[in-house]
Amino acid sequence: MSELRDTRLEKAEQLRQAGHNPYGYSWKSTHSAAELQAKYADLENGTEVEVEVAIAGRIMNRRVFGKLAFFTIQDETGTIQLFLDRKKIKAAMGEENPEAFGQLKNLTDAGDFIGVRGSVRRTDKGELSVSADHYEILTKSLLPLPDKWHGLTDVEKRYRQRYVDLIVNPDVRETFRRRAKITAGIRQYLDAEGFIEIETPVLQTSAGGAAAKPFVTYHNATEMDMYLRIATELHLKRLIVGGFEKVFELGRIFRNEGVSTRHNPEFTSIEIYQAYADYDDMMALTEALVVDAAEKVIGTLEIDYQGEQINLQAPWKRITMHDAVKEATGVDFAAFDDLDVAKAAAKEAGIHGCGDMASIGKILNEAFEQKVEETLMQPTFITDYPVEISPLAKPHRSKPGLVERFELFIVGRETANSFSELTDPVDQRQRLEAQAAAKAAGDEEANDVDEDFLTALEYGMPPTGGLGIGIDRLVMLLTNSPSIRDVIAFPLMRPEKAAADEAE
RNA sequence: GGGUCGCUAGCUCAGUGGUAGAGCAUUCGGCUUUUAACCGACUGGUCCUGGGUUCGAAUCCCAGGCGACCCA
Image (cartoon, rainbow, N blue to C red):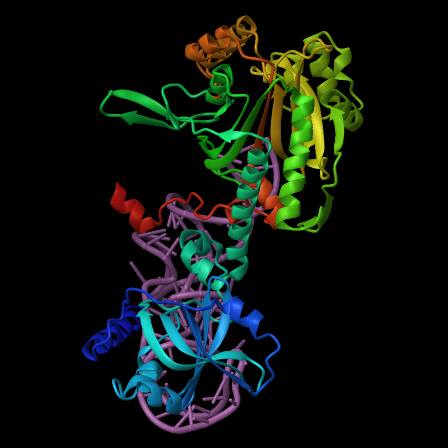
């Protein structure tokens, strides 16, 4: 390992001694690799175009002969071959640097960045190439790239050293390019609809807006504990109170939970609030946003996700939580008004873990999670949730005990969550106080009462529809990625052993 | 939290108790149409860590670390 590195350090030193800085300052390219490939797509084998182009990239592969060499270089757009002819380089560079070709042969490695000027030719074997007359080593790489054929497959290394993963796995670059297109596309869509993005605090004195354990940190100057936000909900609603009618925030939130293929402790959500709208309007907006993203990024609504054919064509199926559970289990929880009877029916239906649940609504939700959720492959809106698990949602206008809420499920995963927002400050206070009591009783995912939020509601919030979409899960869907870690550039990892020991 | 699997050269991987290996990369030599270039020679190891069993451990046992997947 260190021998490989030492060899390259020595090469860098040799370049310096020959008067060439192995860490250059800038380079002006005329084209990207993809632009050249497109522009000269019709160039015939064995022909050359007398133009002067300039290009730069990372050397990915070297095939060196005595007086001729072929390098494959890669830039952000793709790859192109360099045709390096000793005679041509010597004619162009020989006066100032007679060793130019020899240095190219002996002092460059796969991994180095190089800038090249020359003409464009397609070789006899059909490979479009830049036939160099001048070159400059722009950065000397000290560490070897992974195997050119097998690449980097060790998932631990791919996540820990994502930069190496990105160098050698083009599809990983494509995933993050798509991710950027998706978030940009969502912002474009919302901007066109008159929404504005407002940034709300990440550091908060009390974390609210979702059922989740927060991360705790400390602010020295004010000598107080602070929490990283678990949602953007309560602040965005304050903005609606303040008179904005269409607001959103797309950003990172933090939940102090485990890691799985669907969970990372920091992840990205978008929350959108629209005054004078209800959850039906939000369903339409959800469909529009996801369809628009799919069309922009994939260009079709018929997508393959891990072998599953998913049709994103709207409108999507809508079914109440009660009906979905009834279909799956045969049990109609709407018919119960006695908790013990509901528990017995749940147990009968094979739903476990309901023994200590305090309400029929929670049992219904448990039944849904155990028996329904993972079966919802095609996009499906599950509507009308129990009030007990929805402390920020408005009571259903016609169904007692339920709220106007939906969640969107695709490929068995919760992908969006939305309510007609609760605007009655008295009702909201009761619900938050019930949460605070649950927290006092040991529920780590319950929150304290946010008095300022309640004050805001008392000034009056117009009827409002709110929507949250899990961006990571949406990106997983639209990039056919099986794990959330495939769509997060730098997912959370424990330190490796050496680093862990040092930290102690 | 539980279970299963994995960790050996820079990378990808063999190696089930008896001298640590292969391919690629690196290094050296040759080569003006290659593209997993080719030919020849060489080099490269904390076998994840610690302990145990044994004449002898990458291999068997125990504990731990990191990761993947599944379950709760």
